[in-house]
Amino acid sequence: MVQVFKKNNFVIYSTGGKHSEFIVHNKRKEFANGHTHINNFNTAKYIIYMSSKKIIPKKKISNYLLESIIRVSDNKAYIKILQEMKNNKY
Image (tube, rainbow, N blue to C red; front, top):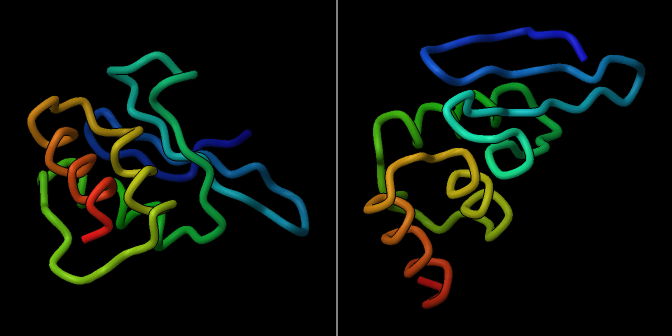
């Protein structure tokens, strides 16, 4: 894994290779509980943006993307709102 992007406490790693994948990790959380796997670099940056600014999605996003934001966030109130959205299938 190679670090390809860093913003505050968030890091994006690339797995490299032909079918490269990206890993978003919040360094304030244990790796096992604070990372997610993403196929697209811009999507990985979007997850960091949403989580760091605590933005509630206005349009429908996939459950996987919603879960990814939840996994890397360290704000309990924000996580609770996103979990409710996921559970209610907004």
